[in-house]
Image (cartoon, one colour):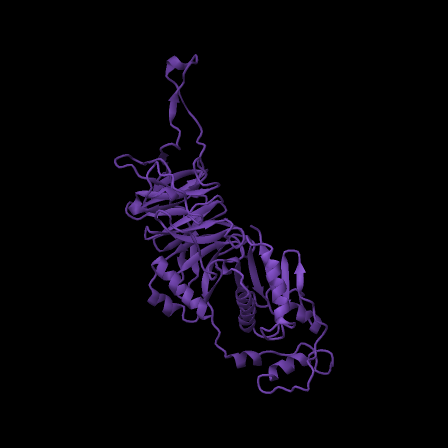
Length: 470
């Protein structure tokens, strides 16, 4: 839990949030959970207008307020005063009260006027927006008729910067790094709604003829980058599905400068699902993710564990009657181990599952209520090391799990301890820590659902080492 607090304070200093506020507000730690404003429908983007969080759902856009009593969102309403066709995120220029958004692959602007609804205008972008041309070499050329070619570049998810004079966005444009990249355009002074030719963000600070290579872990990659969000015009937060990601899409941060490295955001922010966008407010952080199966907004909720370890262990109760000689006794014996150890007593439990590999997953099993393997550490860990060494270019997720006995908060802590124990053992055996990530899932992902017998309960007390695709 201390790791949660320290990471948030460190992360908040990068984003420009007051560390004093973060330390006070998150004294007991936090975890990202689904916002109460979510429905069964998918969210396509999140952004900010002043202190309100804006999100798109079902081709409609909504404003949401930040709840004063928590870090969640509340009181959302339709943004009918401007447009309902925005796709993905929007961005707001406070200096001119102008909102920018993407629809049908084009960028639009609209001035927000509370008294009168304004009509959106399409941005004219050099090299992207096709203007009208006169017909040539045809029978109607003499009539000076004009035609307009269709725009071929699709632009998505804009983010305003530099006092409204620059817009970052994602697009596939010739000359990029591959897939969708983060690009930017600058406003042309004196020209109404006209913008410069798009430039790749990786080219910032470089001369046009500069051919020096881009760092391997730069903002743009051969994979896809999307949903840029700017903090103080110096830090960019974005999503990417590059190889370094945990699985699918994850969130990154980088300083906007030549050769800037893109860093995977901390475990408390990212997950093993697709994390697609993040926004930062003066009060909180909000993440767009499909970690529950649908693209939804996740907000930080306080993570409180008020009981001591002794009190948490006291919550544990037997699942089977004590009269059953083959089951139930292990629980009572383990609870009493902290007070006295009786060497002449045999540990009673059902048949033990065997550790080993199945597909892309290697499973290790643990003793009840402990972060100790039921079998020999050295033998099991050597097998895992040999398995990982077969795939030096892959990353591995170390997932801790528990049975359902005890409180949720206790099992969450125990699952993290188990995963961290395996992580530390593998690092000690020479595995590169950049290949590894560990996370605890408590009792939320049992191998045997509704387990009652000791044999089935034991199968849920495990750590799974999962190979992630390159």
